[in-house]
Image (cartoon, rainbow, N blue to C red; front, side):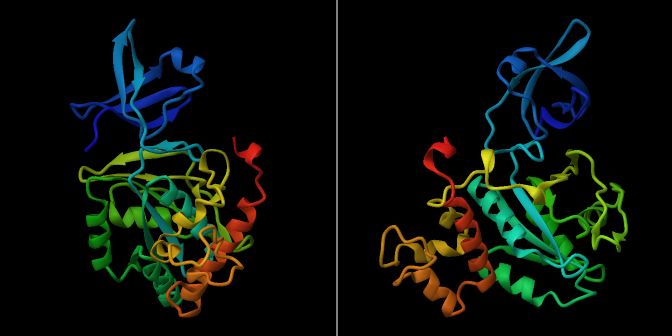
Length: 292
């Protein structure tokens, strides 16, 4: 797996997996403060040993980055969706999918709690969109081996609303992790936060991270997607876009829109299309001067 990678940061110290497999504690060189640049979990770095301290001297170019949660160079985002407790919030899920697609991150869907409620609707929505979907009920182990195969040789993150079972799924995939899990908060109808920071775990065949706060990311700042580009972040739209009657079709209200026609025919899921329209309405409110 990757070498010289930042596994986590705590209180200004960074923990780096070196070429020989050892993990060292480092500080970042002062020049990074002047550049307003901080190492992130997932960064590939170079270090030196000077004056009794390991120091990060270079951060290699990132292929992508997220500010909230702080993370870089992500290969695969596994979005965990529970059938119930909490029920799926499709707008939040589709927003995460769109941001990942925009940043060039592969997306897979893991469905939990299929023993408590039927998962066929969720499965159909995201398989139809073109994503790999895995049902991870505790009595179905085949899908876990397939999910592990997809994760091989990749830096992966798990995301989803609190209480969907991210840590439980990670414990099942890698029992020796023993990540903390909590019961669903019955009063709030959602889970209690059990993860406090991004930390990458080296699993030999892959690297995995439980990323707090990912479900709260928004389409702004470093995650910004313009109203013009949003269509390309819904992967099932791609084969229809060029067939619209108007070249500048927003796919929301125009006649002759091939995407609307595909929704009517059931080729694109209604829930995915509704998410697109909601996100488009939000993004079109931004003026050009606000984007820059």
